[in-house]
Length: 270
Image (cartoon, rainbow, N blue to C red; front, side, top):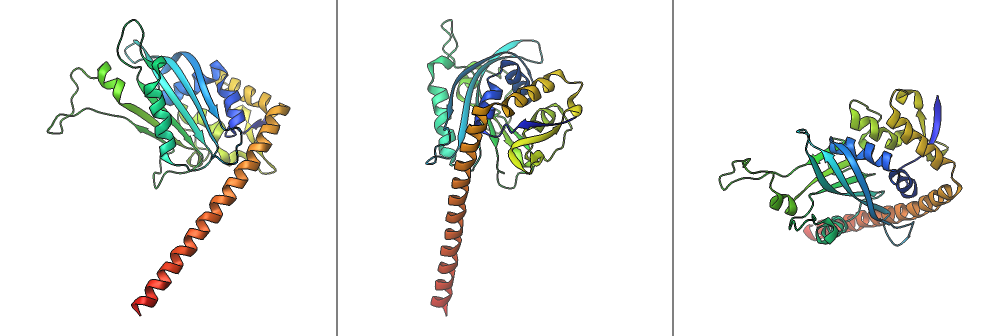
């Protein structure tokens, strides 16, 4: 059956979605490719449609994951979703806060920090990278460039470096060929209702045998019928339009200035 669900790319809807512990476990498990056993939602930053900022939503989690060998480990997850391209400085500032947060230090007199994984959900493309999801992982090497595996992972090393997962929403394109793509399919903007971009048009029969995905759809159905969330989406869309028009004007101005400089240079050369 075809249903209309709230678009989780809107910050207010995404916040409502991820505050559900079961949903958070499903999405983070798919991203990490490890089973999330426990999840704790920490503080979050939501710009709430401020016109003087680029819309960005941030959620921090502490999760307990089951590794392939059956052991359990803690991870600090910093999840950032943004509508528009922004300076990486803001991402670095948030990451710095994660490293400095005393709550991310292991307890029981353990001096090491909880390993950090950053997740970026981007509504724009990154350069010429064609993969919809990019896993950036660190490795250790000796002086000669040989990978060091003995003693790795080490808590000291893991406290000082981190892995990243970058999701390019525009490249999802409705392709579902693994668990992660199935979970991310609810973010696919090619499913937007052409009459109302606040909603996505989804065939729930595609998820009929998946109880976790049906729970996500149910959560987004609730969001679509919530009057406060609809108002928040209206505000966010208005602010997004203002920012987009501003950025387009700046881009056109930069192009015009570049053309004038090139014309002046040609005149001088002549």
